[in-house]
Length: 391
Image 1 (spheres, rainbow, N blue to C red):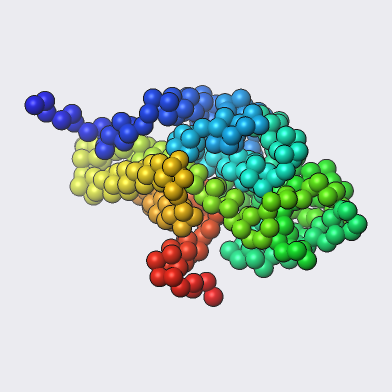
Image 2 (tube, rainbow, N blue to C red):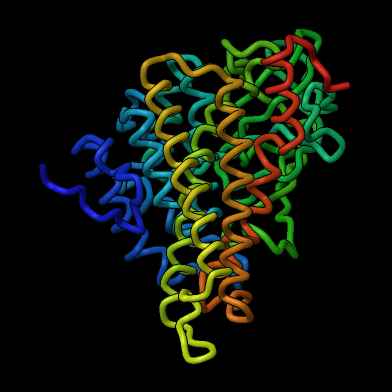
């Protein structure tokens, strides 16, 4: 019997062998794009606090915008292939992956899942190509974790709708061509497709962020925006509409967070081999090895979890509470990996010459958005006990 091969420090459990040739090809294509287009410039984008808008069309050409949706010029890939793409994009930067997630898994998914055939034909093809950018207006200044309390209100005026309210912490907001806006109404919570050229619509970029700086985050103001009847998402009624979209986006985060974590682990591992102290590389010291091993453990476990949930999703067996399980675990793990990698790099860990501090700062947002650590804890608590404990 041939002796087992020595494990690869960058794929210790041989997870690569669990992927199909098609999945590995998707991963390779996205990884090549990230290395060629994102990694050489992302530190500069982060420092300048800007998202290069031209990247939208490039990501559309790559085929990752709404790639897991079917029809309407979308690629129709598997959930696992989409997850692998999120991993590679977030290994570049969480802000860029956030753009992809908001475009495909929130704005496009809302139209694809809840929209009319006419709405799908009008919006999805140009959004898949990156020609039109979308955002998702749910969170409000006083209602983040509790979206059911939203104050944005839509009222009927003849066949039209008049929408008034404010949304905040909206990724892509001020560069978007269209906003998916959720509002209370006399009929319950409804969703609307709002072109950003609509009279009364305004978007203000939120500045002075120290996280997700290569991503646009905005406040949306709707001052009696008049919308035609065709702007209503006809199939979305109640809070289940936006929550279904959030679950879709959280799936991408499960994978993406492991991409950021992997980038931090790989950086720390390489640094430990070349940084010499006391006449030895620091990777030869027990305490540094312990940090690296703990990073490896959480990275491999989180990646296996993402793959398992992806296979479940492709079989149609993934429950929303299981998505919460993945988001809760992998966002926690990724942030701890980034913090530990920062410690391995010492003072060099706080400079943008290395990717770790950028990933660490970004992951502070990933830890919070699309459901905080506390909210996902309570979702799981209810799932296993049958008792809701949100209030």
